[in-house]
Image 1: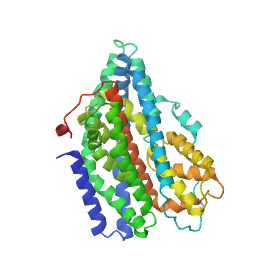
Image 2: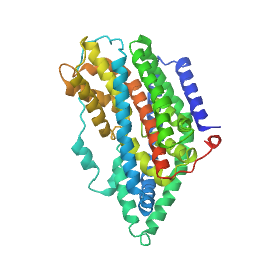
Image 3: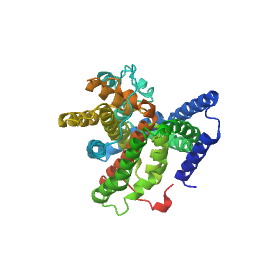
Image 4: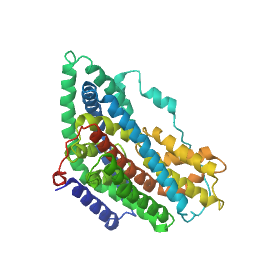
Length: 409
């Protein structure tokens, strides 16, 4: 059975469970919330070991084959361009379509968020390199440590061959372990989907946020069905650009219902390898960078959400200077969300509301009931971008062995 079918069945059972089980019961709701948190932790259990060992091998092989800087340059370029495209699509859609206002409620104090850029930079180099393997959220920390080891192990291939062999062996081991975790996540995901559905039913019941959700969905169809396939067709000269979307079905399902960009990494890694045929030296280097920095989906939903909040408070047109400010801040701050794999979109929205001031500091409370939905769509966009971006880099650097669609897992 195809992996995406297993995950789709998990979604069906999760949605069914949310309708037939006593979700109104507080004890049951708490149990589902606990199981959801537990299963997300299970899914993220292998992420750091997999990324660390695989990145060592990838950097070593890329440096040896003299493809490291080309791969890095392409990855950075695609991250920036994809975030620009995402933010622009979100801005254009919300400016062209005027969504109904959200009823203004009494503002209450909201938690203040800020991005500690200095702290993030310092965290990349902890007092002990081995502490880089402790943080399961900000993956750039362990990636930098792996990069250093991979770079140096390629400088003296003979002397450091045991390091490469050990890393290669552990990488293959963790890949197999991760594959096992991706199989059981199709079952464990039933609880995650059930929890998501319970929240979604309460959000959709009022009808207040339905237009916003429809806009998110339409934008995704435009990006996944038109923009990205056209890019793949002309950049990669691929006659079948939709095969990347097909290979992304299972990762998109998991990322949407979990809202977690780190949880989906083992599943994405498996599909990049077994479905799209991307070599380890490429996917183990590019995808972590996309997962950390390519958060254009968060910028898209934040742009739409903030302008919706603005229009709910005022009937005046938004000044062009403010539009450019919203666009620039959403785009720029999206690159700093790497340490927030889950909920980053709402954090970004809160920061923009606080920075805009003018009485908007607590206005984010209007969309707080729809936090999970907003973050789900952000993760959906970001996962698709990472899949498409990894494929483009692999094609342009010729680190791919194309598979027939019938052989996709």
